[in-house]
Image (cartoon, rainbow, N blue to C red; front, side, top):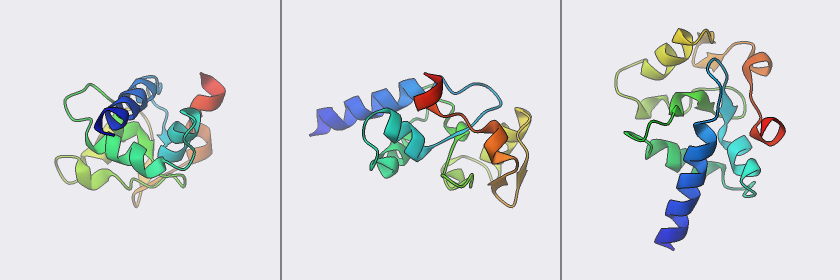
Length: 109
């Protein structure tokens, strides 16, 4: 069981590393791309465990564009600051123009 979880997490990291600069995707989109459509929460757990793995976890948000993982980043608004540094507008923890910056790995890869 533990080995399967690690393999899934590694696959999540590989997809997350492909998210282009200035774009975002959702936990569910990564899960669906990996053939585990009902595993969005597991993708979230993987993102939480990605510290030190050179994974752009700030580019993964919920399906509505909300920064639901922001409390896992050091600092008060680090996730938002990282996104804004890539030109993504965020207001009230919500990505603005979400449909324009959304990247779907199932269509792009």
